[in-house]
Amino acid sequence: MSRKPTPLFALLLSLTLSSVSAAEQALPFTPEQRRALAIVSQPLATLTASNARRLPAQVKIPPSRIEVITAPLGGIVSAVKVGYGDTVKKGQPLVQLQGTPLLEAQRDYAINASRARLAAESLKRDESLFADGIIPQSRLAATRAAHEEAQVMLAERRQSLALAGLPVPAAGKVAGRATLVAPFAGTVLEAMAEPGMRAEAGAVLVKLGRLDVLWLELQASASEAATLSVGDAVTIPGCAATARITVIAPHLTPGSQSVLIRAELAKAQDCVKPSQTLEVTVASTKRASNDYRIPTAALVRHEGARWVFLDSKDGFVPHAVTVLEEADQSLRISGQGLRGDMAIATKGVAAIKAAWLGIGKAEGK
Image (cartoon, rainbow, N blue to C red; front, side, top):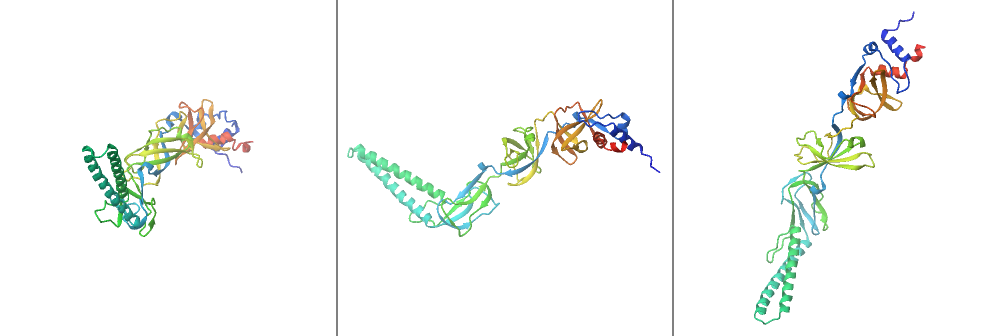
């Protein structure tokens, strides 16, 4: 004895028998059928996508906020006063060096200081002799030139001592060690120096960074980048201050085929760390006119494409769309020809898809 079909099954069967396969043709549903299948439509004007964009980002230190401390002269690292991650003040000792080049630098300074004093005394004497008419002006000019040269050489040696972290030596005394200090208040990003290592002149010993200003490097698709502008606000989880977009790259990154977007966070306040990866929210100041956020249930997939069903006076019309962003319960889509005065099916979509694809048609014959 055969079972009598349920009213809902009979309704679906009648719909599939009258379905059409062409995407541009309408699938008719009577008001009674819509109620029975719990089909609900919603105007696209009420589904306007939020201007907010959630994008992955990585925290970077701007190159202008990084400085390296190098060995001004060759020598042995006798002590390292800081380590990775330490916060330092301006003038705080970082590394101590010792070695023969340090002694030689102080010796050269002492020799040039002595020559500069002799040149000053010679100039004073020749100026007096020239005033008395004893020597010609040419000799006075030569003495002045020698004095100026001696002063320049002394200034050079004094600057060399300062770069080496050495004090100006007192008469007959030289320092056996040089102390390199922090040129500004910041954070130790790298400490390459180790006690006992031999450092050549110019070797990088410590890398310092100022963390008061940070960059966020965002990755966006070409369609997402098209909706963003320089100056858009970027909200970071855990940060009271917001960043601002400063650069939108004019080309795609070769490896990821994404657009690099840079935002600057002027007041980091320890809410993010360099090299940290996180998700941020960008408040776009512009939006594509056919950009909408719809419930996940409103979208169907068929033959590699994605579709929504437009509600028209003749029934539901399948319309291909592009998915720009996926969330847990919603999708951000765009589609050619979509307008705010149109409506799409947001519930009962499975029944419309069944009618569109002719599911159950063979059984009805």
